[in-house]
Amino acid sequence: MAIDPTARVAPGVELGEGVEVGPGAIIEGPSRIGAGTRILAHAYIGPFTTIGARCHIGFGAVVGHEPQDYAFRGEESYTVIGDDTIIREYVTIHRGTRPGSATRVGNRCFLMALSHVAHNAQLGDEVIVVNGSLVGGYVEVADRAYISGLCVIHQFCRVGTLALMRGGSRTSRDVPPYCIMDWVHTVRALNLVGLKRAGFTSEQIAPLRQAFRILFLRRRNLKEAMRQVEAEVPLTPEVQHLLEFMRTSRRGVAMGPGGPGGEGEL
Figure 1 (tube, rainbow, N blue to C red):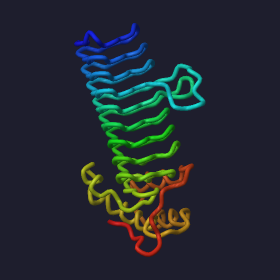
Figure 2: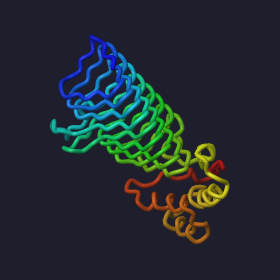
Figure 3: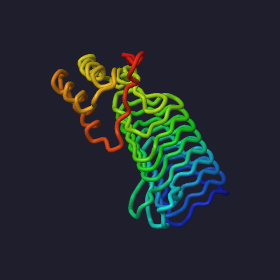
Figure 4: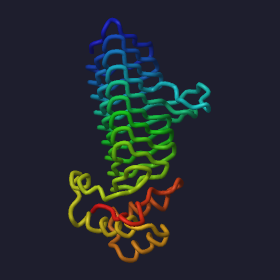
């Protein structure tokens, strides 16, 4: 364990074996830092924060500070960071708003410089959030989603597994799994590169291609399109997951561009 003499570690902080705390860093208690985690200079770790093992907390990062929410009344709420997650310089992650609630970031995530994760957001495993992107309150981001630079996700939205938001895009609707979204909640393509890198086989991808064409290549009644998928496309686990995601949406689902020139990339 190596703690710089200028760092401030409050009583009630539990530090695992091999934790490093850099110059000017502040760790409020109670909180718990997992073995092998590095906290670099001038980072701030708020109270009621749990950080897993082998994490990297960059220069000036703020993890577990109070939420930017008028509903917050100072009650005990939490921030939970999984193992092997990288949080780069000046990232901000705020704890939950309501008593007992938590903001969660999963294992092996990579949050790049100046990105923000708001109160009560839930990030799965291996999520990447690129520089300057904003993840609003209560947003859910599923495993292996990729949020490119300067994206904005409205509060309460969901981003599905292996979805990709292109740089500078924004959404106030749910982003379907396995899809690429850009501009304003506009689905453009199936995320073929991401699927292949994740180990999906041709047999898994082919039904998703079929479903994508029906659901997103032209504008139509969504329930009707989903019924057509159920009737015509093999209902593999991946297709069923896509349909269930769409059925359970409360904010509406990002849709294809529609109209002339609206054919997505496959």
